[in-house]
Image (cartoon, rainbow, N blue to C red; front, side):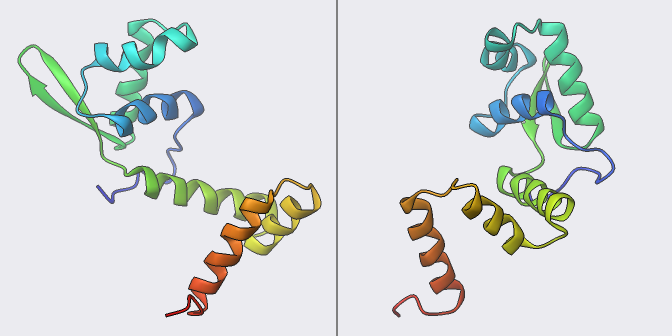
Length: 132
């Protein structure tokens, strides 16, 4: 599941909601996906089917026939999607500098003490100072 959709075909926010349902549990029918995402968004089954069709076209979702219906599963792992989106965000807003993102969060006071502790632990691990 390490595949990534075509880079020219970004996953929209609406499509990501469908992906979240599939990442949580799959395979699912279109009706099951609709049950998971439509009520909170006021979407119809037809809207969910359209989003699923788009995701299949973007190679983010695969289908498997199951009688007269299809089962949908993510082709893209959530971690791979998050990594790609994170990189695009850093590239677009901070010129590719992850330090720029960190500095922005620090200046905006958007980092809690728990966040800082996790970042410090991550840095120690990355530098091989994890106490091994």
